[in-house]
Image (cartoon, rainbow, N blue to C red; front, side, top):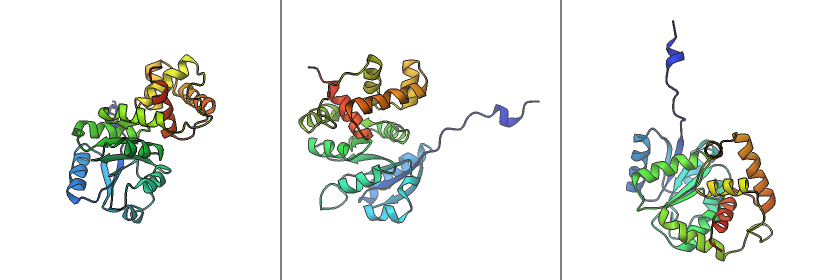
Length: 223
């Protein structure tokens, strides 16, 4: 006889999220959407300091946050600090080029406007929690133009020579795919993709995920 454990369907990976937004109705709406989709909302707070009071940020797979949490300006310092420990998805009413680029530069793994659909928000949360990058479609050109106008990471040579497979990997990273998803697309092992990414980092002198995404957007520009 085959046991129930042997025939049980695999359970989806559990995602634990935190929400930071100074508008209670927005927090409620995002929280309801996430929990309805099976995503655990372990914290929902209105101020950046309150998130730290809930425990270590690294305990969350993703922090979903507004960009402007008070009247003092964008919460870039807080987002950068959170991004050092976990993935951060920003959902903001602002589509200003400077806000989008600054958020990505400080380490955020995604940026959506508050016009995003429920489906896009859920997809972005899952993508970012899995280590990918998510961006509202209408922001792609804005971000690309803004990042090209700023300083280039590393040695200032965004067109440093990469192998065709490394170029392919970098393009997939810019589209928000995880290493495992890239491996499936390219028909290689995940360890091979990990190696490609490390070579890209070395050749382009890149550090974090934001810099990788920035380099990919720069390289995808028509010359």
